[in-house]
Image (cartoon, rainbow, N blue to C red; front, side, top):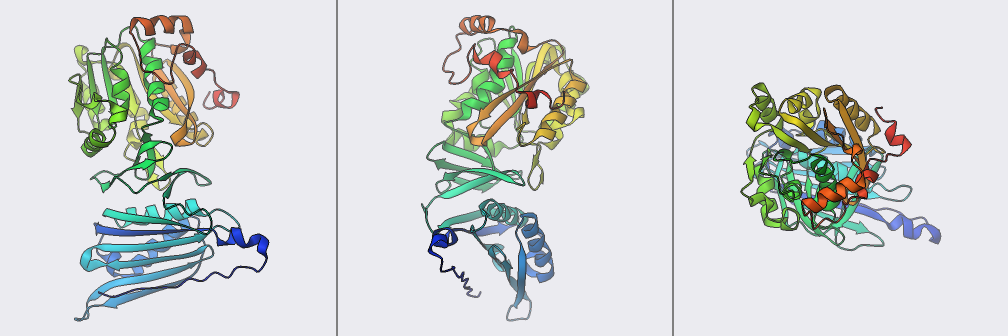
Length: 441
C-alpha cells in the first residue's frame, strides 16, 4: 500500500474582469471497488495507458503531457500503477489497487473559455465502465462560484450537447449483470433513475412520457385486452395501461430483474403498485429473444392487442446499448407477427432535433413493416428535448380519431388521474412541425 498526493496550480490573469470566470471549474472523483476488468488493466502501465488515452480523447479533452509509474510489491511482483495526464483543460489522475481490485479517479477541468463539464462527466463514466466497477462512489465539487454540494448529473445528448440536473447523493448506485443503476433525489424531479448514466424516469415528470407512450394507441384501439411491454421495468407504462378496464393481461418483459426490484422499493410514485398487479406477468428475459421465439409459432389466443417498446436508447455516447437489437427491422417484423388483428406497436424514436437521423431511420423502418405509421412528439423535461414516438399498425391509425371520439372513450373507460393527456392533446400530438414531418418521409 502507498500514499498518493498531487498538486495542481492554475495561474489567474490579473485582470479583475476575468477572475470570477477563471476560478470556475469542475472537480470529479470516483472510488471504484470490486473492479471486474482484465487484471492487466490494473497492473500493466502500457495497457492502462492505451485505455486511459483512448477514453480521454473520446471525451474531447486535450492531452498535453503524461506520466505512468508502475509500483512493485516487496517480492518484486507488479503492485499497481499511478498515472497522471496533463490536460489543456487541467488534469486526470488514476491510481490502481490490484490487491483490492480498486481504482481511484480524479478529473478536474477549468471552464474558462468553454464549459468542459460534460466532457469531464463523460470521461469519468467511461473510466468507471471500463474498469467494470461493481460498486463506486463519486464526488463532484464545483470550484469557484456556485458550489452547492450536489452533483450536477449530465447526459450527453450528442457529442456537442448535454442536459443535466443536480442530484443528491445516490440512494442506489449498483451494477447489475446488465447495466449500472442509479437512483437519487433531485430538487425539481423528485427521485430520478439512471441506467448506464442515461436518464430514464423521474417521479415528477414521468407522466409526460408514460401517458403519451400508452394512451394514444390504447384509446385508438376499441378494446385492448392483452399487451406486451418490452423494457418498462420502472412500472410506469404498466400503471398507465391498467387504467383501461378492458386490459386483462400484461406481459412485462424486462431483462434486468434488479430494475424491477429497485423500482418496487424506491419508485412507488411511478408504478403505484402496478408491478404487483395480478394482471402483470413478469418475464426476466431479453426482449429480442422473447419476441423472436414467440413469433416462430404464434398462438391465436396469445397474440397482443398492444406492444409497447419502453426501451433504453438504441445507442449511447460510448456505443450500443442493451436495447439495440429491439430497433432492428427483424425484431419489428417479429412484433408484427405476434400482434392480434387490429393491434398496434408503440415505440419512441429519439429526439427529432438531436437525433434526426435516428428518428428518420426508425420511421422508415416501421413503414417497411407496417401499413400505417403515425409519428408524434412530446417534450419530456427529464430528457431536455422534444421527443419522438410512433404508433405502427396495419389497420389502426390514431390520427383518424378526433377529440370528440377520444373524449367519449375516455368517459366510457373512466380514465382518471391523467396529468398530460386528454381529448384535446390527442390530435395535437400528431400535428408535426415541418422539420419533423420531413424526417424519414
